[in-house]
Amino acid sequence: MNIVGWNEYRHEKSNEAVAAIYPEGIHSVIAQGLQQEGVNVKTATLDEVEHGLTDKVLSETDVLVWWGHKAHDHHPQIKKVIANAARWAAPMDGPQLQFGKSEPLEKL
Image (cartoon, rainbow, N blue to C red):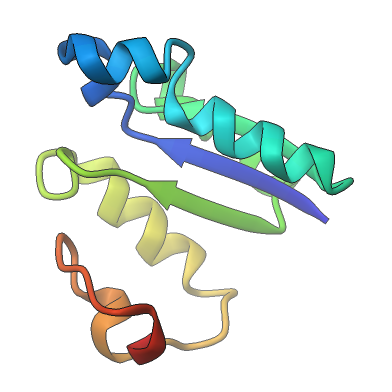
């Protein structure tokens, strides 16, 4: 399985306390944890070329995980990629599709 952890990478650059905890970004920490479980993981961030999601990266991706807090509604690429990826995904409804809203895990 090939997973891409896609992160906005904003708090780590703008908040010293967060940068001290996640100097390489929280996406790197999540990727390291998954890699320890034997999963093939790459990371991508909004500041990379094509926001880190080139056609090649996406064509080699089985699971795309978005991790964000500040840029949900501030970046058109997020909704575009999610909408495009959803064509091949199992349908989801309810709170999973509500951008910027968090729900208890048991409701998801």
